[in-house]
Image (cartoon, rainbow, N blue to C red; front, side, top):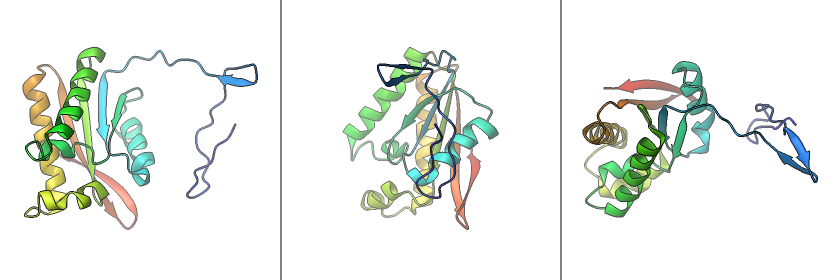
Length: 169
């Protein structure tokens, strides 16, 4: 079965069912182990670039995804929106502990509508800078609570409708 990207009619990866049972497709469970948690925004414009960057550039074939609008935005509004932070932090802690993960990759991106909407909470700081500061805050929090876990942060920038990635240190 060939699926197509609804935006530009490019073919997506082929996904064939392993077996049909009572007219319904059944697929094999992926038994490859993940050692990496990847956190990024759910903006549909960036999903293909995120996947390709993670697998092709970083060489991570199997990973545990945590996809949430605004990526790690909640790290930057802990005191203003403590529930947002608590939920995100609990998800991260669960994934790392239960999955025995050794690496966390965090990606925020330019032109994020979540950051645009939340600008009233951080009106003194320009949005791209705020996104990068939140990356650093998330990394520091994870490193503080999880020894032995490597954290890498990336910024997905836009130029001429193309996405490029830069590591944020």
